[in-house]
Length: 145
Image 1: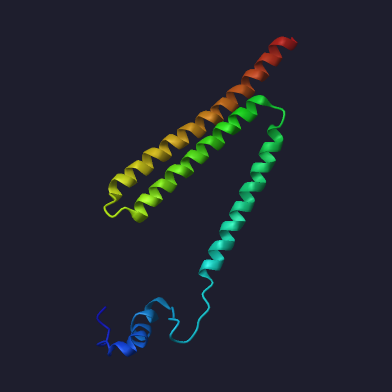
Image 2 (image 1 turned 90 degrees about the vertical axis):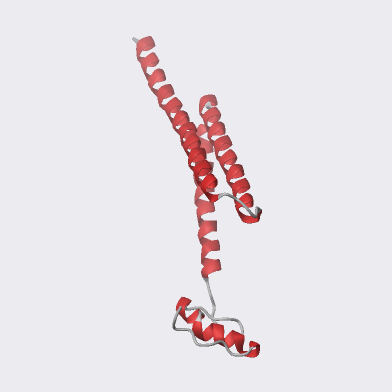
């Protein structure tokens, strides 16, 4: 940043940062004029909204699967895969955050392979559901005739 002026003595460091660095990012320091930043609040509300939508969808899916053993088994497998994905991604997040020499290239390859395996499991579950519907439809036609 070539447009910076020389920093003043330590007592005026907050004003120096506010006038030179923070104007670029349109933010203010607490030591200068106050500015309400709603970024954290908006991300929290967006996250809560997403969780609410997912929970409503999950509740409706669970209610539709009630009394159907095959559907319950498939749903349990999908939930197990999702929880495994969450646990592994949380471990990667902890390693990324707290490990001093965490290799990002290895993490990127691991994440791609892990998501590939996750999507393979989900596609397997969907294919099982489709196969079940087709087989039950064909067997119903054969036995009713």
